[in-house]
Length: 184
Image 1: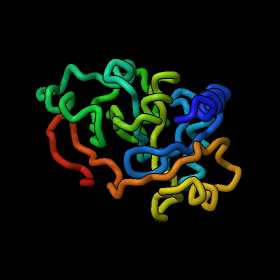
Image 2: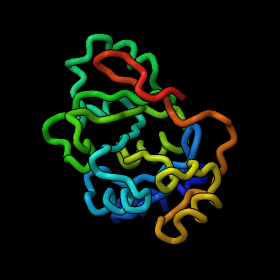
Image 3: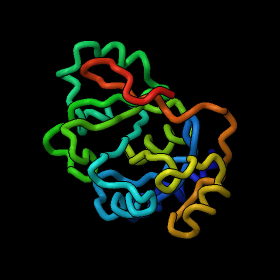
Image 4: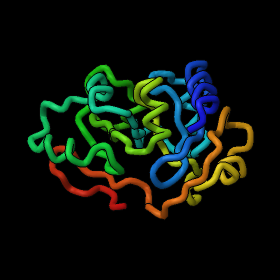
């Protein structure tokens, strides 16, 4: 990713903005997870209930330790072996994690991405919210033009890129049981 785009995306998030960025399979909407106003904006854009919870994406496992409690996971190596990569795990959330991230759950969905843009963003910012860039029931955006057609200027910055692979959104698994919640 162009360093100018990285700097602009980082600055946008740090100032409370919402960005759209390429992931392994689709464009994601993101912001800093502890900025409640920014998270609320994403939920409004997606027409998504706060009760569902959100995904955090990170560059390293260490970045997630503030948010989730890995100590209850019996098969931790399975999770570690899947990262970095397109597998999201639902892990017990720490008690300090705000409900605008967990929704009605005591868990949080987290992923360590293998995508170079996501890793660059998270290396600068720490974990960010990662939810597909589409309104409820619309197909996820795979181009920056699709992001703009869905949201116009309601997204503060769109990293110019296109998704070139044909993967589906990430697989989601339960960290306690290993069961697949959503297959890719």
